[in-house]
Figure 1 (cartoon, rainbow, N blue to C red):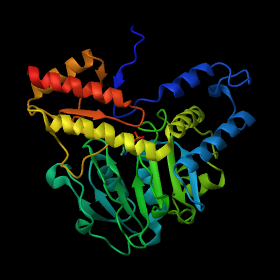
Figure 2: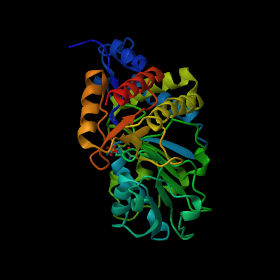
Figure 3: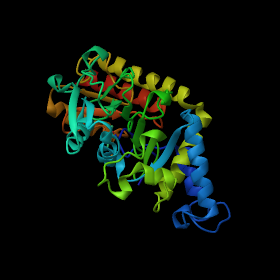
Length: 361
Ligand SMILES: *Cc1c(COP(=O)(O)O)cnc(C)c1O
């Protein structure tokens, strides 16, 4: 085995900053004189409670989370939120608006239908989810209990370039694959949630940022563990939280902060993505799946149009140290996931590789 790290373009679980991994490594058997690993300590211990509180505080600082919002560290993935959101929020009017712009919002939409009357506020299915609907294209119901959308479509490689205007209807947003890739005005949202394994931490943690007044109105049969109010009241520690992932999140947030926070992440995001899109647009072989104006800064989807040539590209890229570039089966082709931890240099080298492949094939 080579001790050389590869450039890992996985959509998730995905790259973490080396500094966070090394720090975890150095503390793996003895966390700061406790004589034990974070994996081995009680979630009620002083050492862990401190990790927990500091991590919450760092995220609050980095995302500028206002008062009146609670940060929760939950489990069951982003997918768990597909059920938790309607169970807790739809009771208000029995109705909700959903914008379906990709795989995960479609799953959320189908799940929500179990609990109420769901209005399809927009869909990009007509063009294979290659674009984001404009504000004018949203069919909004002012009696909706909430408006649901997914900010970045991980599989199709599109990203909302605006925050939908929904008046008094609270926004619920799946930010799994673009959280902390830019500054966000949290006060515009009712709920922001994210599975941590794309841009925050290892798999097993789901971050939820919730306006507190939205909790406490759950449907009567809401499972205890799916009740936001339970988790707010117990500060995410009704049961054992995903301790290790919370610790790793804290280490990643230290790195984000040292780099200059969400603003620096946004600047680098577009530096990476524009470089890659420019290279693909000026190639003779490659076409991007997402339409200009809707393209994601985190997941770049592209293809040659020839499945064999795509496979050749992926195989040769892997050989050259660029791994996990195969696209999701729903879109085919290739996908380069370039989250916060992907160094600019990784994308520069990938662009060189693409240019070389383009010339030779
Ligand atoms: C990966 C992903 C999910 C699913 O996350 P899990 O934590 O595996 O449930 C949901 N939404 C988006 C946008 C994703 O990228």
